[in-house]
Length: 205
Image (cartoon, rainbow, N blue to C red; front, side, top):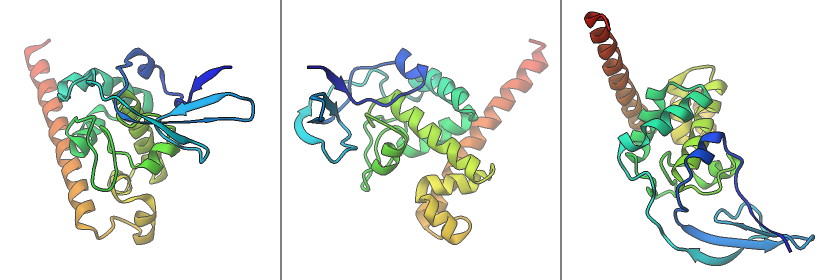
């Protein structure tokens, strides 16, 4: 009998930076061919609870600096500005891979269960997997709204249906505050980067 684990197909960065499993319940089911499928995200109605996975220390820690290389790799792979991706992570979870919101959003990029399933995310508490899924989701939203970052960020926070219904930023205080905080973090990072470039040019390096 063959045993397989249901895992998302992620880009190479995930394979190169695989920390030990995070946390979550383990679900399983046996298909018609006798193959057993196991996952901590029961995306198929046939999954049944098996056991609670033991929590383990996340490899990356919770410092933004610890995620810098990973964020650069994922941003480059998804065609995103690294400062933008960093700003979203900072605003969403403050670099806490175990963060869970009251609404059930989880991980570094605070993905809702439905979005996690759509992005093929197997473990929302796995830093690299969560970051890849979140970045891919953000990239899709930016493309959908033709580069209008404010709309993409609004959709990331409130959902695409809300943005489409109001034909712009939804009149939700939480969403408006979210967009403002992301843009502020993004602008600060961009300003710091530009200041560094000016200093380098001044010194002739």
